[in-house]
Image (cartoon, rainbow, N blue to C red; front, side, top):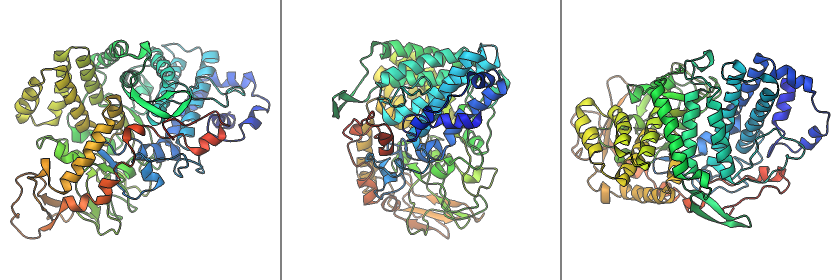
Length: 599
């Protein structure tokens, strides 16, 4: 059955060119399907195959997580060359992209649709043969498959906007499909997630939901809320079916996808999670990420769901961790981490007392087994690194892929979404208590009066509170691939990306908001022979520090080159909110797929 299943998984939009040959061969017998979907173990193996598409080389592991969502107001790809890889980040991708088109293995689009097909096969089989119910294991697998399918559609919608709607296994009549209006998909998966919650237990309420690597009720509800906010928000849409060049930024015109319909749904789902008390904030922002780096996957904490990667499979650290130039006691390979980094301006957007700042934005790298501010690498990786992800926090020494999970939904996201929704529903006071919970963790208790209580008390209007949410999500989720989607749904992508480019230029020239910054950053090795001490990033740190061993660098000039500023975005971001459908996917679809948005 596994061999048949694997073959089925490649019979869908944008996969292989030989699908007609398969479909002309004898179909598998009904007995074969029945024997699988009446058997719990075989059905679970089929569900595991759906999960496996997260880890495909060109799926989340090697293409989506490195390239989607970069070059916002808080995140950027750490490269300045104009390549097919950087074009996926700086709004200049074209269909004939070597990273995404014509690759040896199925590319991102194909992997996502393979996963959807695998889920469709599971759902059809369980419905026909499995007798799913809320109190049996087949019911859990059924809910799990619904949520996994919705998750892959969520990422397709983020990456491409309008895509084909496939909600049944592929047949000879449905091999080639045109794109559907994204609103059709939104409504289907929002309804699917409601259905799924009837079959899913909360975290730790069943054997399979004791880990954040399996689907649970809390994640299904949080994803449904996230999709409600996304569907009710702004995005780039084609002008009409016959004009593939023109586009506009607008809300949906579907009456079922308006804020007044979707925000109450999101409110209920998020409040259900909070009231369940099945998840909770980690007491420490830093410790949450240490636990992530140490492979702690017990459910019931801050993670609602993580994309599960085997030890030698995932590349989350390779993409987002602090850069290691060469081998050391933490890493048995070279040049890992530092591919995606904070924008140079993010550090200065933080409040100086915000505990998240120095966890999120780290100025050093590793070379020769110690921290350095400047590496000797010919192609410099200067500037900031995300400090949420560190090889030095791991309990394993890796030689290649790191296998660290991707955090997909955190409890702090639940709280901030709920705060945003309540504010939009004119419950400002109710919204404030959820913002307060997140900010209290972000500051020392001695600073709560000023940074939490007084700060929130000054938010007197819906607009002021919304702006506070825009800021808070920036500080909480930098480096977690959420910002681009947030900016799009708020209609702030183009504005904020352009503003960030201007601020980067101001920062390297010490203009406007950055006039009073020190011109030199000083650093020296500490007595442990591994760590460095740094001085000069903050206003007022102008004096030459006392003591031996200090070196200095004009940090802003080194970290923000002309090319970094000029190539931060190539085209108008709001004209390139989505990637094109790539050429190899277009070619296999015999003209049924066409690019919009001027591609």
